[in-house]
Length: 300
Length: 295
Image 1 (cartoon, rainbow over the protein chains, first blue to last red):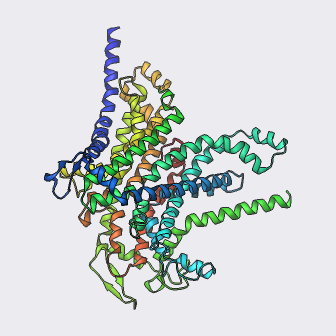
Image 2 (image 1 turned 180 degrees about the vertical axis):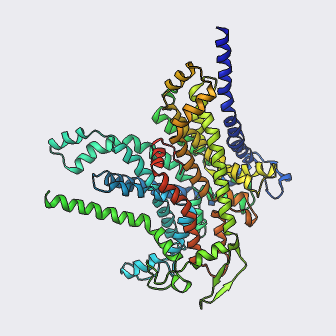
């Protein structure tokens, strides 16, 4: 009996041993940076003169609160996120419905769909800069030869157009995410539901709103919450295409934080912005866990 | 088979083709531009199929000869960035593989541990990872930079390798946890009753059945670290240590942007991921199914 207990204890030691690397890595690479980001938010820290770093209390938060650019970035991030999510969701669902059709060769199209997800953001940003070039870009040329515009549009040099272009990049790259999730759910909706509705004489539109959409509600909520959290905090998708410009017209909080830390050498102010972002993210995650009652899920 | 049915099918295919075009056009256009000689790059009307195909842009990138060209289309050799293209490529490969290996080993061990053993705190780990992978890199990057500076690792490939662990580890953990939960425990128990040790069971029984999950996690991890721009931008300041993503941005220096060269580097940067994608598509979809997608 005691030998069995010894074995159990030795065995459990292996289990603990297996978790140690993760615990160490999580502490060093996840917990510590976040704690350090929070600490920095209360310090004045110039990366070129780290020895002069000192505690300033809430000064950094007051700075961003008083900075019109912070609020502008906040508003633009909200606009950017709202449009991106709206378009991704609508197009994503439409695309999923299309790819759900029983057509020959549909799996080829389903496969292609994932492609934008693996294309590096740098690549699509470079290619878009080339395609959207005001003078020699292929987009302006196509629109002009189709007779849709007379004058060249300076896509990345006019504020509204630049915002639109970054939204387009984001939609191009992440709509597949929505489609994949929705498609997976569509495939589990029992067909009998539709047959019954057909017997009752419900049209295609009616069937979509009465059957499909309610069935998709749950997966769409998850996707929208997740995508909202991620999209709101995106950096590269905007920075690589417009650098936040022209002027500051495509700044979001991530770019604001980056510019404060890198260009203005105010890491404390950048970190304070990061803390605001983390707070928003935390609220978003709480909503997520609340909606799906994560805690009730049983782990073996 | 009535006419309305056929028409509907035709319409569906038409829409699918248009969408495929929209999805693929940026890459097709990049490929097309990269194969044109300088005089055709900016020619109007722009042509998708080049009149004249040349591999000069690729040759310039790989042999490291960089040439910008003047408005009159004569070449101007410059000393700027591109002689580093091959080093950037190698750097990208090294840091992506390095950080993926670290993340995968750590999270495989951890996922096995929390799904098979009972000890205090194990339940919190998945939720902790979920929170971890929602934290955007912009928040992590500067504190991590200070950590790396502390260890004198900045401006080295180590800083990137470790830096990427901080973004890939949480979602590898989340994905593998979900995966290990689904592997039935009975087989392991039977083997252990037959006298096989824990490590033996782990290597011979658990790892093979976890392989699809491990592959999916590895692919996502490779994609994320290969595509990163921000960490490299902040951590590395000498040009030869850059990965591709930050490196190619140096091609914007100079009077004229050489779009042919730029697009050739875009194509080469996409190529490894595209190959991975084609070979591993099945596993990618499985990974999406497990809900572990960073993006």
